[in-house]
Amino acid sequence: MRRQYRRSLRGFVACAVAGLVLAGVAGADTQTSFVDPTGDAGSSFDITGLRVSSYHSAGDSNGGVGLEVTVTHNRFWCGGDGDGDLPLIIAIDTDQNPDTGSAFYGTEVELSFSPPANARGGEPVFRRASGWGFKGAGIPVGLGWECGPSVGGYFIDTAALGITPTSGFDVVAATVSRHTDTAPDIGTFNYQPVAGTPSPKLGPDTRAPHVVTYAAQAVHGELAALTYRALDGRGKTADTIRIYRGKRLLKTIRRPLRDSNPFMLSHVAWRVPRTLRGHLRFSVRSADAAGNKSHVRWASLSIR
Image 1 (tube, helix red, strand yellow):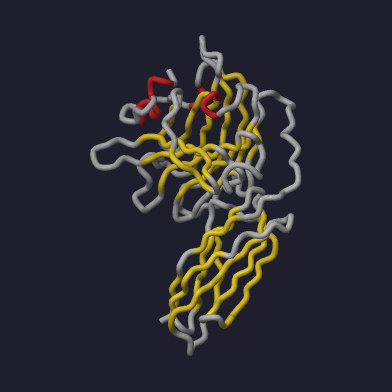
Image 2 (cartoon, one colour; image 1 turned 180 degrees about the vertical axis):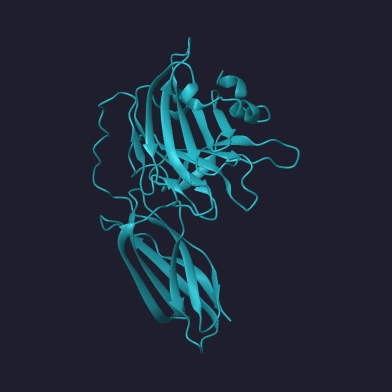
């Protein structure tokens, strides 16, 4: 049943509406539900929960996992909401180590969804960690997905994830929208198909954060919004932002160590002097709780 929907969303929305949900997969062995706060995403997709299920089918020795997310608004995941909101991302840390894999909490696998384009129906996207981010990988056999009102998710064979049916993993769900929501709000949920299994003990944190900066524009005498992304596997950074005109340092802004969600942009505001116009630049450098420091990243700041 799982595999007949591989690469075929055209009939799947109807199936999802008709009642096909991940929790209903026959042979479910273990199921854990995680709750996310309601009302923390404004009018965007608001995640309210993430349910993880381990399942097996007759003749299938590998087993699989189902990951289902619920939201408050009655809107279809698969086409966005018409205002730039895109569908659901679920990322999995298969080795339960935030210091390996991508900078998105150390996740090794990302499942997302490509909305319908032109005459083509939408389809799932499977990515594996590559450096700090992810790169596309072939759709594995056994990947299925659910796309219905107020619910969305994926199910996949454990072999495709590179784990066994009894392996635990860390998982995080996120929306890509005007107001990103993640479940949990910071960090990941830990899922163990074998009850009572603890997550592995982490070693010393030796991996520095990664920073991405974005060009900015502002008007003299008004506030400039400087935008960047601070990515750290363990989700805590302290950031230093410096603003320059040529080689002259105009301002230093320091943000103390805090929770840092890699799925969300960070912003700092700077009041531009009334007499200042022209081309500036700013730098960002982040440090994690262990003192590891990122490379310095730069972006332009144009003042008119």
